[in-house]
Image (tube, rainbow, N blue to C red; front, side, top):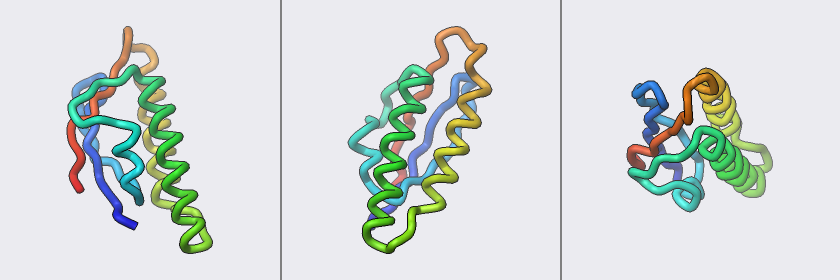
Length: 95
């Protein structure tokens, strides 16, 4: 499975590199695009769960790294609900 990394910019301007075990993430996000915080979390949840399920189908166990990444995204996003109209930008895919 071709894993990929993607860099996001949070509402406070900080950036973080995230992981997906599958290129499915590229079907849910576009490099350079900005997403409302809740939309970003939902797209992350959907794509990382699909990616984990693909690993499960191929190797018989879900991808713990993808599930941990989702937890990290959800935890980080919770910090920004006080921001007015928080947005997250997908800066780039790193391959």
